[in-house]
Image: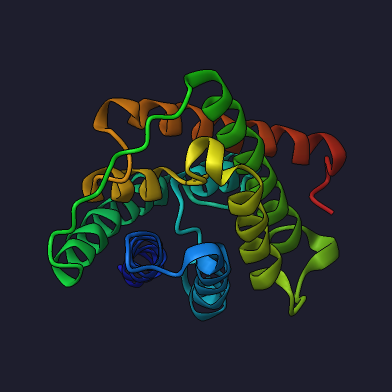
Length: 208
């Protein structure tokens, strides 16, 4: 149970930070810095308990890589999704139900952008947090957080820069993304995680 609680907490703070820094009054161009930073510190906080996935796409990738028990996959994803909803509702309360215009990204560019950086995120996670060759390193949290930071700056204007189905749920509840577009994130993010796991196995067949 403690693993699921940690997954809830980490995902909550990630989605909460996204909403607070993106919805006006927000953090402007520094929003990705806050998002990447909170992800990094929450990974350091919870990595020793749950693995600090905070992302269904990461859970999928780690499971396919063989480092997540099958019995934990659905509870992890459930905890992450519920955290996204709870965080979104708190953001709306604190922002006093702001008027938000839902983004309407072009489908193909958004799919590609979300796939590319979710792949990058999951590939980094597998290499810095599960590989034998990097075991015990002290940089894994910021390697992962800075991947999200870079992705948000690189393609945030194209897709919204979720790279995470739980974040997609949160921004949908907040009204930052239209509900009918959530499939874009679910498909691209989960596919990115699956392909990242396949790529990791291809370049590190022994898990080194």
